Length: 264
Image (cartoon, rainbow, N blue to C red; front, side):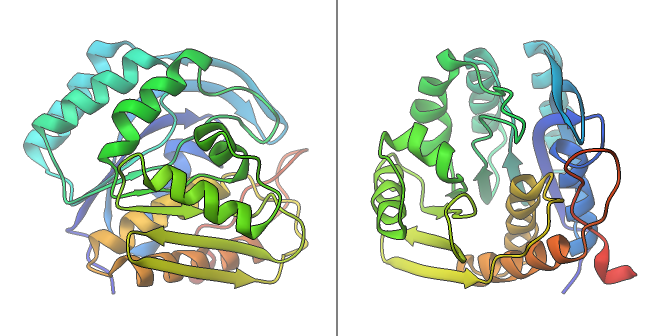
């Protein structure tokens, strides 16, 4: 099911190498079949080998981007990714109160694969206090979930505990991504009356740049297209799995997933 007239919006940082961030989000929106739009919060100098520098955009231009997009083309679903400062988080929350959408997806981007901190330590409190409670679904990986919940995660049971702690902050659903744990890849969807496990065999591929951005954007698109939360997560899990399987070597480090594998 595709409908390129259904608008989806990503609010996130730009990845100059094209594998993650805004670029991955827009590729995913297009591949799944929605009309993608973007609000850039920061510009990163990065490639397949790491993140080398980050420069945040001003509050003014971030708010003006949201205003311009939402007043003209109201998005059905909005994904928020890299928001590195407490001021930017509050600006986004205040803006989205003026321009509410049906689905708000929060991907709490904190640390890049190369270990670069993408969220200032002082911004974590604002993320937890202001942004996460407004989300329809939050999609943390294990290190992010540990930071948010203050629970050490070594097992799927730990994922459940941390997921419930995050759910108590106010979002309707939490998708705990288990890719950082050993063994098969298990993701867990938790809601007030929902518990679903999505298990797949771990794929032996090094090119996983942008996986977190991609699955959260896939969920954003599927929700916008009218799928329910369980089906949206299932379809998005299948999409990222195939995108990893079809990933390719480009650059000298961790390459990107293949967002357009369906069109080969």
